[in-house]
Image 1 (cartoon, rainbow, N blue to C red):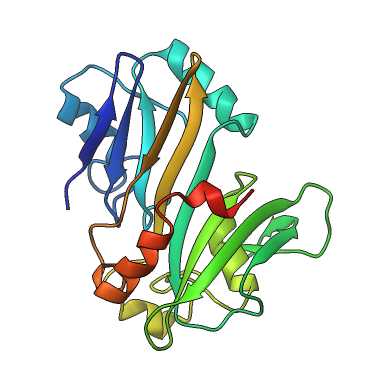
Image 2: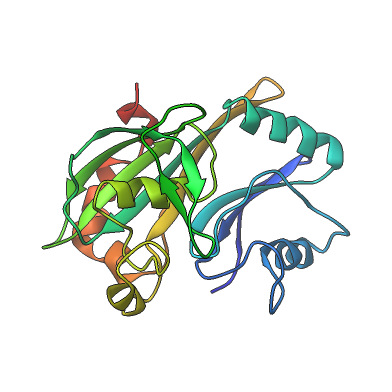
Length: 225
């Protein structure tokens, strides 16, 4: 799986990051290094990140000044982010909000608490796709580590293929973790931008039933007014 450039201008680049690629370099070259080589530039600047298992839309800035502006937009929630996920478990509810503080658990995992001191806030809708599969469209209103993965687990619907939060034996059978950064919408220097990127890898995403469901979500912001 290779990185794809979806859009670029003089300020930033929008990429489609493959699943199973680390954001920063670990054993091999990470996403940022590979993206920099792909553009044949000296440096690109990160303003947000995606977990290794998560594919989809990600922004890299072309200068530190632009990076600072975009980082501030993320911090002040002026960049809307939308994700899709598939679970093999029935959720406790089909749409709504998931709110609660998050705390570190064991071995780098996190868990959701019932307290609300500095909560992770996640909004979602969902629909049935194939038998035992449910497609979630998710809008995180905060940016906590592993927020969406923990939120769906708290619903009783861990993400298919998520070896950390799903049932391990089931997760290992999947070709990928089924979380995808699906859409971005924001304003930068008075110009409005919106991007929607469908997944390009994973049989559970690419079958005709899921593709028909995604067609209903082609303007995801319409579901969260």
